[in-house]
Image (cartoon, rainbow, N blue to C red; front, side, top):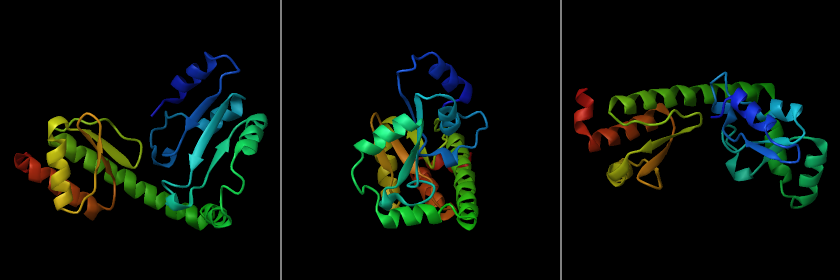
Length: 197
């Protein structure tokens, strides 16, 4: 996560002809009030665009729909370079339906549940001695080094899919409480003494 003040200073230090693209795919999961807001920054600077998606928090990954916010001249160029009919009518309808008040309430409930679970899992992992960076998304990044293969195997045995990352790390998507409990049990399978702490 980049802080609002840090990003503002970065943008202000650049020449106006340099385009800054702020990827906010996980913005809905950010609960830090000091976080940058790409859309607000794009409203203040003609060389800033913000990208957001309906793939993550909205759950529309298979439909491949998102949006760009920026100065009209940049939006026009992007629109001219885009693939014709790149977003289907079904994807557009789903995205619009996701913006209704009822859908927004459901989104808020889902995001709140994920953030709560993310913090619970993070706290548990820290208590086990796994030092991991704070997440502002719907997943955790675990730099477990040489134990990554053992953790991945323990997860697979419990039906939990984790994504291996370079240099002995794992990416773990936050699911339901029950799914996350299966992951935490896999952690205990590798480090049984952890449960005694």
